Length: 91
Image (cartoon, rainbow, N blue to C red; front, side, top):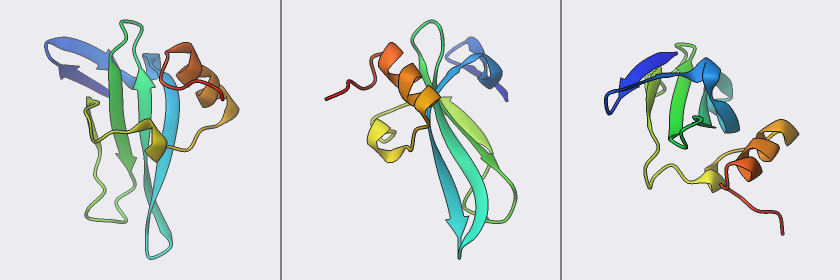
């Protein structure tokens, strides 16, 4: 997905994914929201919906205070990216 945010062009294919959150409507998968970091340090959030829920729609925006890293699940690769970009530390 591509978008222009604050006069900068971003392509989600070029971001380091640091977490994801799957969405369900009555137990039916309806899409995934991703948290990623661009090489310039900008944190981007984007959602890919499959049309099964009217409230989950495709979209992309720069992360804000409502996009807390604690809301996202992480694979090992996503965790490594989150550590690399300073979004989390290991305890």
